[in-house]
Amino acid sequence: MTKKFLTLSATAIAAAIALAGCASGSGTGSTGTSTPGMDHGSSSAPASSAPGSATAAAADHNTADVTFAQTMIPHHTQAVEMSDTMLKKKDIPAPVTALATKIKAAQGPEIQTMTGWLKSWNEPIQMPSGHSMTGMIGDEEMKKLDAALGTEAARLFLKQMIAHHEGAIMMAKTENTAGKNTDAVQLSKDIVNAQESEIQEMQKLLATL
Image (cartoon, rainbow, N blue to C red; front, side):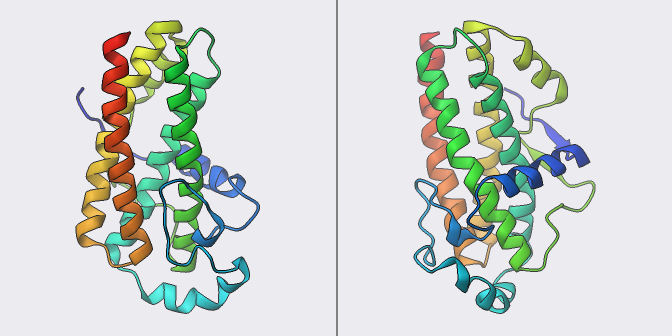
């Protein structure tokens, strides 16, 4: 599938911030999350210790870390939206519903984590205007997914999410090589591993539909 390079809209940014705020009542930093597959070294620290480490956290990052978080937040937000769309539909094959549930459960907390990083680094959550991301699904394709039913919807979701994951993997690999913050680099590795595995799963599912 052809990857889309789209400029993020203000609406998507608002959705990302809103989702991050709702994801958990335990705070916005990485210490408050328990995303499967994520192993941040400070995960065992109490949430109250986050403010005291803000100065160190602000110093321990670079431009690549900021770009990674600013672009991956809206990218994840769209994946959650796509998953929500599927979970509202009837007559969707159970393995596809299970996959949508897994994607939402993993990426929602990661949005919260990355939002917390940007705040602790004193960096804006919204990326500079004009920045594009690979793998984002266009409005027309989102409308098609919303209108599709049953097996047709399942196939469309899988095809769109494969392209979406491929874009996220490209972004994560850039962070893996250029990032400085250890938690951000680790998350980038986790994203690559998890989403490469999910792409294989989705390709197998497509072959059965």
